[in-house]
Image (cartoon, rainbow, N blue to C red; front, side, top):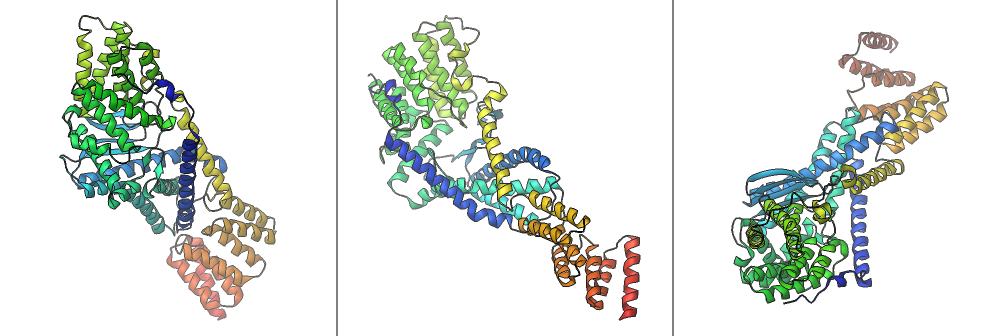
Length: 569
């Protein structure tokens, strides 16, 4: 009845094979991400878009810090909403969705919105929906999985479509930067969802869709585990689960995450049925598979389960405490509340074994309270039975006012905002810095450098240094091929050098991009046509200018110019 796997076995450093596998996975993932960026970014950034001017570098930095996380959060909400809509269309039942640190869940008391406090600065998301009955539902699951990537792709196309419609207009800086980041956040999310790959311990949406499409023995195992999870979410406790599904989840391949999940469910099933030796055997197999994982991927729930089992059935306090000491805070977990509940139950059993009855009852009552907020209805039945058995031994004990901080589960400890958010803030800062560096070194990401070159060209023109002005305008156009003002300035500089044909070519580019936005451009092109002796073209430009309802002074100038040119012609 004793566990064969010990906590000491988890202190060993990762094996060379584990490190190699992790590095290879990181390299492949990075190459996929970079490859997708290389393909998508030029297409997105060179697509037609409206003009907007960056006031200054300081404004660019500050507004990027504000708009980038907001745009990424909106993209996460949009992506997960795509999953929810797709699931609703195929008739699945809503369970839970997370948008970064926000969690909306269907609990026993109804829908509840809460904050995952362990890391406020998060932009991950997860949507969880289940069918209302047993069945294969393979196609419906594929539709559910496809909803997120399709929504992200739709976001990218929508923003690009709006930019295309506004391509002949000058828009505000805030709107322009927001649309830019909404496009870039969609580009960043697509490789993480729409490209088949494995990230850490999880598969992307596209990878899971491909697995379901391809089929095979491993898919049968995955679907068996999915049915067990879905049954639990619908309210079926482990003891009542189909033995065939539990067995199928443990079959192929034996070292997979599906087998780990299958053995864990088999342990809970045996424990609920009172088969303690079988429960120990299945928990040993679960721990053996966890031992093969990298430390960052090991779930605290497994260690808490081992601590509970050792404390209750082996009555070994040092060993139970050693298992609890292996629990480490997770970077992000949509089911953080459910994890806290299991950790509190394990803590209560360990405290009871240690003779701390008042603290044990407090921990058990807190764990029981959290069950009312759990989305796992089947596990709630199982957990309630375990807690009731524990509380029955503490019936006459007065609970302690609260647990000391050192005895609380790691994930339940409240931390100050900046401490809880340090990792997210650091990641946020790194991403923004990388974005700004891309802006300085990738010529088309931010138009700020183009504006600087344009302003330098204007300064050269004011000093009558036309060749230098043209070179500066050339740089601005090279940085942003849609920078209409730079073409305009370059046309003026060529006019000052009496190169009227080149001036007309530059004015043509401005008018092609903005035929009605800048009426005065027709004055400049008409003047160039006049110098070239092309009076009909000049008259046509003045007439176009009049049709755009200019101010009275400009209207008078255009009218007089037409009269003079008609007389000269």
